[in-house]
Image (cartoon, rainbow, N blue to C red; front, side, top):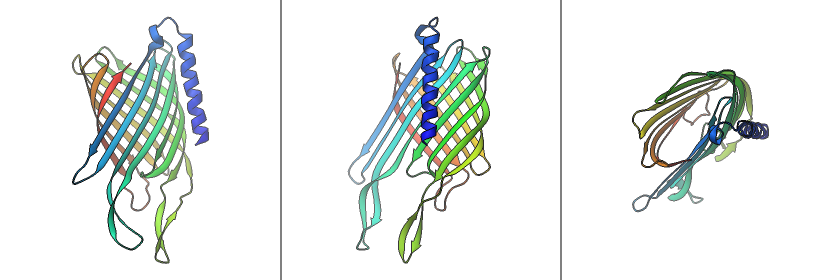
Length: 265
């Protein structure tokens, strides 16, 4: 995990250096957005859900860089068995996940670029407690105009992850068993598609693939944003995440549907 965080810092430093070395483009080609969504219910049920995202991107004559930080947390009433064997309802955390990543691409020509990428994710309730990946590959901008953008990235990488803990019965008591950390070489692929439907409505879909011999991980993020002002927008998002190798009792697929307020800068 520490190695991955160091790699992300190096990637971020390279991105900042890229901004300083290209003063001919206004603002260095940087854009960014922040998202936030919150929901709370009281009465017959009690739930709280919050999710937030921060994204930065840069594209100019020499560089194509991206950085992101996401977080999601949910609490709700769940039925548990207390020390006396009684079933009671408690307000407990039901989801807790955050992830961060960066990619730094150096353009070989207006369409192709060499890209280094790193990603780290922690999920208390997922198939893996944490997973981290670093990779080096080739990117290609297949299409780019005022309305549409389509780009691809592919290359080899290295992944480390720790599967979620399992629970077994030992002498009639539930015992948590910690799983060992796994590592493997993976192939990383990324497909990013953007399409502006109208002047104030845009659709974006990103597919990430990290495939190894032990585990295959796929993540697809789709979002439809409707601008209310030049800076503010409302975004509807849907995320699907798949792990091919999970512990007993865990699902291979997780989904997340969001409605967030977006601030663009």
